[in-house]
Amino acid sequence: MAITAGTEAPELAGHPLLGSMSDLKKDSLATFLRARREHGDVVRITAGPPGVRATVYGVFSAEGAQQVLAGESANFRKDNAFYQEVRESFGNGLLTSQDEDYLRQRRLVQPLFTRRRVDGYAAAVAAEVTTLTGEWRDGGAESVDVLQETARLALRAVARILFGTDVDAAVEIVERSFPELGAYVLRRGYSPLNVPRGWPTPGNRRAAAVHRALYEVCDRIIAERRTSGRAPDGGDDLLTLLVGAESAEDGSFDATELREQVLVFLLAGHETTATSLGFALHLLGLHPEAQKRAREEVDRVLAGRTPGAADLDALPYVTQVLKEAMRLFPAAPVVGRRAVAATEIGGVAIPAGADVVVAPWVTHRHPDYWEDAERFDPDRFTPEAEAARPRYAWFPFGGGPRACIGQHFSMLESVIALAMILQRYGFEAVDTEVPLTSAITLQAAGPARCRLIPREA
Image (cartoon, rainbow, N blue to C red):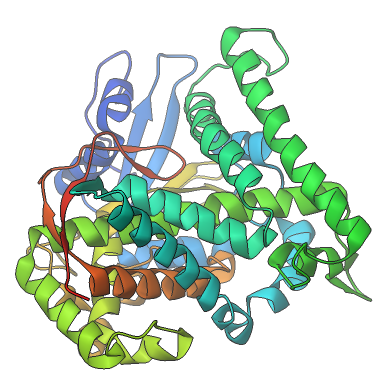
C-alpha cells in the first residue's frame, strides 16, 4: 500500500506529562465521546509519561469503521498489546487468531454455526429461560438485577449448548474465573509497562491459579468427550461437534485447540447476549409504552406457547428492542487494531504501526446517523430506517471478515429469551441509571434492578 499524504490527526487535550491517561482510566467511553465531539471523526489520543507514552487513533465514523473492519481489514490486524494479553489468558481461538490459523479455525467451525444448526439450539435456550423464570416465581422474587440474571441465563445457555449435560462444573468455574481474568487482561493490556507473567507478584499468582482451574475443568470435559465420542446424554452438543470437526484440507483440532475454541465460545457466547438482553429489560422497565407494545406482539404471535426459531421473523418489534439496546449498550464498546502500513481515514493520515480503535459506543451515538442519540427508540430499526443508514452506523457484532461467527445465535437466544420473559413478567426499573465500565466487554459497575410484575397465567 502506498504511503498517503493526509493531514495530521488532531490531538485530544490532556495533561502535559500524562496525556489522557487519567481520563481513560476514569471513564474511557466518555473520553472517546469527548474526542469525537471536540475534534471530529479521527482523533489522536496519547496516554502515559514521556518515554512510554502510548498513542491511539480513535476512528468514529461509520465510513471509517467500515474501512478498518472491512475495506482495508488486511491492513488492520489484531497485533496490539490488548489482544496479546487476551491470547495469553484465553488462548489463540477465533477471537484472537490471525492469518492461516484464523482461516483454518473458521473453516472447521463454520459448519457448526449454519443457520439450520443454530436454530436447533432454540429448545435449549427455552429450557434455561423456563428454569430462570421458575426460580423467580418459586423464590417469590419481587425484584431482580436484570444484568446479573441475564448473565447467569446466558452462561448456562451457552454452557448447555457447548457441553450438553456437563453444565454445572463449567458454569461454576467460569463465573469465578472470567471476571478475575478479564480484570487482569485489562490492567496489563492498557499498562505502558508490565512485569512478566511468570514473576511471583500477588496479581500474577491469583491470575495463574484462576487460569489453572479454568483450564483443568475444560481439559477434563474435553478429554472425556474425545474418549467417548458422544455427549453424556447421547446428543450432539457443540463440543462433540468440535471434537469431530475435520476436513482433508485442515485436519482437526488437537486438545489445546479445542480448549481455546471452548474458552472463546464461553467468553464471547455469553457476555454479548447477557449485555443485550439485560439492557433490553432495563430499558423496557424505563419505557412502559415500548414494553406494552413488545408484550402485545409476543401475546399475539405466540398465544402463550414457547417460541422457537421459526418465530423470530414474526417478532419484529421484539427484535427492534434488542437492536436498540445493542446500539445504546454494545457489548464490545471499543475494538482495537494495529495498522500494518500507512494509510488515510477520512483524509487523516494513519502512520504504519499505529494503534487504531473503532468504537461502537461512539459511532452508535454519532449525530450524523442518530437523531437525539441517547433516546431509546426501537423504531430506529424498522427495515426502512435501517436501509437509510450507512452499513457501519450500527456494528455490535463487528464486521468484515472478522465479524462475529455467533451473531445469529446471539439474536436467536436474545429474541427467544426476551419473548418468554415478557410472557411471564412485566418490569419496572428501580435503578434508572446504571454506572458502566469497559473491560474486555461492557460491564455494569452498579445494579440494574427491576421490580417484577407477575402476569396472570
